[in-house]
Picture 1 (cartoon, rainbow, N blue to C red):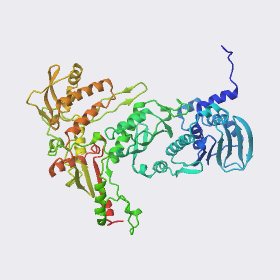
Picture 2: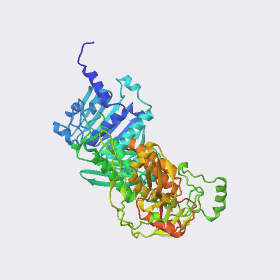
Picture 3: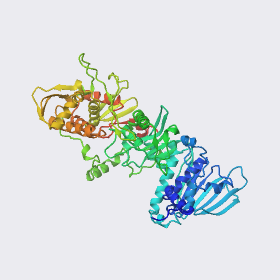
Picture 4: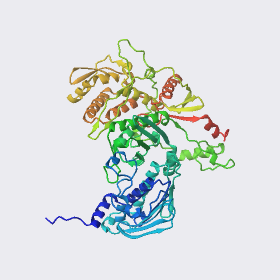
Length: 631
């Protein structure tokens, strides 16, 4: 064994720098946070060749005085902490005093800084933690830091850098997320001489979203506002229809700091349960403000992760904040008409995808359509079965039955979701909450017809409402089954129908008999391993009961083995889809009217269980603009 010795200062600083500075994006993150903590209102970030050769961060913050500049480059030098109790109330982004020391250890750093009260500023140069220049000079208020030749003295680390475009994208992501978390600061990002984005710094989160992600995504977002029990949630989430194919656009900020949090992620996605298409994920920019003493931000070198003292409270707050926002404004979609403000009145473009076709172009359009028929882009698993064309809506599904004197009161349930703590995922049973019985709709809707034997056309106030009758009926049945409120729809079976199950399947069915009863099923368990069907929900009576019951039993088994499994929802999806009316079914106007009233007055019925939208609106104002009655 070699003799133990203390590492030299230059080696220890290189090792320490490696814990904080992993790539150019790490440098940008640390220095931007310093600028924000310095009170900057404008921050410009400029990079070349992915940041490895050149990075410059300029701000109009408070600056540093001449004597403090060298001290700022010493390890553990900070103005944010003076006593151990300060660690319990950290609100600044940087606080450990390692940023400048770590950067200067592995790069050539050139600093120009000046306080407003000083006549002269300071010019300071350091290379690999060695001071090269320290002098007074004239310069603007604020601080400008140039970093050149990152890892010039650690060639091995430089060899692990990725392509310039990859490193530049990582920097761009850091600047974007910081701009989102601090909309009161105007950010400018310049990549290889080209301006990539520029935020206004007006303090409006929506303005920052618009600058970072563009007009289209910003237009699909809805506001979130929630304040309960010391936890404040604000920001924006996306309408379910416009969810993305991955979680890249999920942004969580705790007390202004961007963090990665499985707790936040699961709570967010639980709020979107049964609203998203398969393989889609919600977008969010959520600000979570809590007492700093309840958050540990020092569990990761880059402070990218946090630990909450009360994880269930945070999870609940995010879930209800997002759920409330979706129910209030996020589940109704308006048709996007052509914006005529952008088209000169005297001109028309034959290549425009206008929603209407002028008379002289109808024959040409029909000819092109016959040559290139439209192909549906709906995934195969969501295609509607059109074979059964004469089925009628079971209107009993939509009407609350009068309460029998011998039956307990049927309550709707708010579906539960999994909470996360430090130890494991913990399943919670659905929260029981009484909802008022369905009464005469307060909001009036009048069905005027049906388009293509699938879309209900109705008037409501100054809107035209289009409802997908299959998707809507499917969601109605799904909600009834999920809320276990189907005893009134039970239909007794006269002929004996026995189904053979395995011992495990039989046991799970018997254990969940009360739950099955609330879903409208009645079984006799006296002839094990057979169960005898005595009653089923009348809207399922035409289905293959052996297949349905086997799937229910299997899903009960899966949920017992994995409490977080969505297997139960999957079987309910299947049951609802198979039993709902289909496109091309013949339904009279009274049946369509009943369905339209249920859909229009129930905010839960805005997406089918697979995530497809149920209802679109067309405002009278937009329709009149299309006909050029209004401009």
